[in-house]
Image (cartoon, one colour):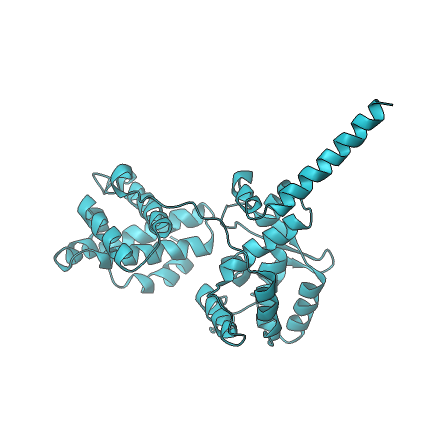
Length: 318
């Protein structure tokens, strides 16, 4: 097992006993070998922890001792607890999918007799929601109050390059090609490597930020002397801090900036195929969700097409 993985996650698994620790670490090692994004691996640990503490106290000792002892009823309890905490059905379904993959691993390893997550019993009905971009007025007010070079660069990478929060936090200086004005994103959420392009304001902020930093691996190092990147939680906190200043009417999060990137480019006439590559989507069906956010662009493309057709028909009629 990778010693770095062991050192990173063993302290985070102190809430369970040795058997359960070994089960989780073996699974994380498999995910790492399959090149899962670091953020996904971290989320798996968080979900397992929430599951362990969601079961009733009489069951906790057994689950903490051996996660393979989880039952259908334990999953029922997890859903009930998550719902009581106000988590959205889609969020709970995502957590269940991650847990199911872990339990599948234990089953395949011969440690778990039955899969405790049942599709028809545990799948929540979740309404279809569209990505949410920030309105232009709120976006301008938000950008105006960001006075720190680092913080401005963090949010510009999401707004101008379409990066996810986890991708921003893990960008290294080696990923950046200054001459080509590009950033290579490795094994992103969709397991699709991609190259994004630096807009002039991103390039300017990046140059200024680099001039103020010592030689470190990550563009946004964390508190441990650059050995680890700035966490997603810290980026969320930064946005929350800046949102207090202009007294914006809505509670935004960094997740709003990526859809804003998508809709701005679609409105400017970029094709869905190109947007798919820029955002690192595995399927264009995911990209199509962004196209539903605005009717004006679709109408504009329709009008353009009709204009070409009418000109062609007029030419044939002569």
